Image 1 (cartoon, rainbow, N blue to C red):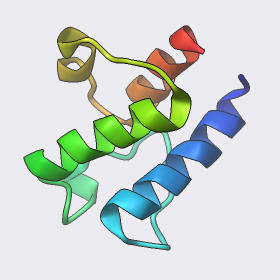
Image 2: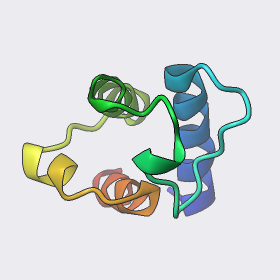
Image 3: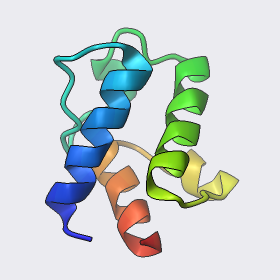
Length: 79
C-alpha cells in the first residue's frame, strides 16, 4: 500500500475520531497538536485505525508511537 493511501485513510479515521473535518493526518502530527487527543481518544483512535486497515497492534507498537509517521510505518509493515 502506498504511503499516500495510508495517510488518506488515516485522515478519514482522524476526522471521524476527533469529529474534525479540518484535521489532516500528516507525518509530524502528534497528540500535542490536537486539542482533544487525550488517552481515551488515543485508545479510540488506535482501535479505529486497526479496524480501518484490518490490522492489530501490539502494546509495544502502540507505546512506541511518537507521531503519525510512526503509525504509518507500523501500518505499512502489516498491510
